[in-house]
Image 1: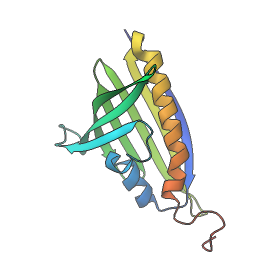
Image 2: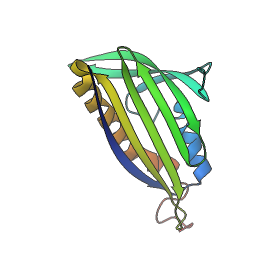
Image 3: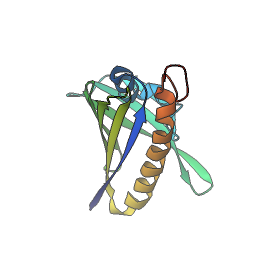
Length: 155
């Protein structure tokens, strides 16, 4: 039996929509930002995907760190919307739906909804890991994207 739940977060950064979309649609550019990722390798895209990647994360299991590799497919890669679906055995999927919007003050608003589905015995662990990792990623995104941090001469 599969369990499913979602969480969301919002980030604001001073950059262009194109810069934000380029970073968020390309996992190879997120290796230093995502706390679990240790390797990203682009692979031929699956049918219907704009791009596909094999991603290796390092997950904590008590004092041991275990590498897991999964496939992530970028399904939508537009200036204002990005959708990726990551699949890992057994029957675990993470859907990332990101919406980007330019704000009048030169900021970009990034709204992310993550939906995780996993077999009931794995769900609690997988959901906690995904939420913690994505919230750490969110905290790092604005800094990575800001082209003129607050207090700089561009303000």
